[in-house]
Image (cartoon, rainbow, N blue to C red; front, side):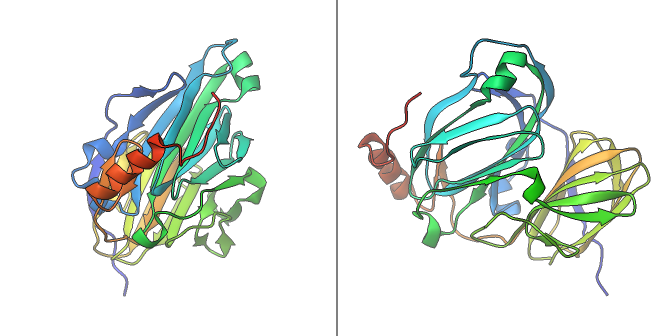
Length: 290
């Protein structure tokens, strides 16, 4: 008989910080000891709760060209819209419910801005960005880009809500994102008193970000902006909403390889980090206009 997953901790958000001039976020992994190990394959979670940006003529509000190597960035828009361009020739704009899944792989330059139409109007902006590690054998993979629209995302209906499956599978609904290692990423909405149940193997890592409302998580209360981390013990996770709620579920098979991270690069050794800097400076990541 499967047992309940033990909750390792419920973390409140650290103070917000700005990424560029367009993303006001809380960096959750900064407050979790040994986060790279406890949350592998996930490396970072920057969550920007709803914030009203004023209208502007600045159509470059966001983050200018910058490099990455060795991992993937996943940007989920909940309100507002984000434009992406990169040195591999990919680009796109996502709005509420859409996802950008970029594979930096062997090296890429990209920029992320508020989409021009949104920037001119201003208004509510809410987003999350997750960094997903790549195993050593795929660290230097060809850069790629998946622009996923809301209508492509699999949806599993619940009696009191729904599960949007961005990656992986839930109750027969499949996520469109192609991943290098097994990952489940769900955007879940529950009505008041709605329930959702998940089951993940004990050896896999799992966590939940509460974005709206309050929920009971295996009997422990978590409220808006809490981050719930689970032990690698037990399998079942049961949630019940105390009020209308929305939360992001992250689950994945840990990569179990050394992590060497410095700024925009995540590799396995310090020597590989130095090589990434050398390759970037020599122009091997391509070129991207601001």
